[in-house]
Length: 129
Image (tube, rainbow, N blue to C red; front, side, top):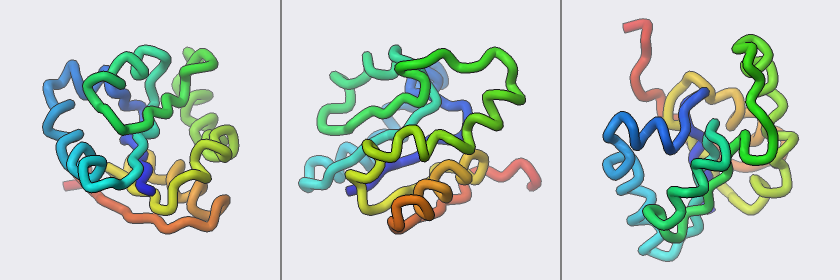
């Protein structure tokens, strides 16, 4: 029912390296225990799928599981605007999209428009402050 869109460029591996994986995933693990379907849309690759054992019941949708992330950051950024179209079938299974930060919220916003779903926006840390 809920698909969390990670901050642009962030993966489960990055959460793990930063030591925040358990803290950030706790809310969603609780939702799973309550019977809700949960997914994480990450900017990781196939390595993000290795976290499935740590995140039982959470579907992991890595943007770069089946393709290489462009080495050019500008191309990768532009490509992020097409990800909702590429993952339309997987994303259509969820009724609510949620952002974790504003940086990357455009992917969730495009998915919301494309699939006519609800969007919950969390601002998180804003660099402007």
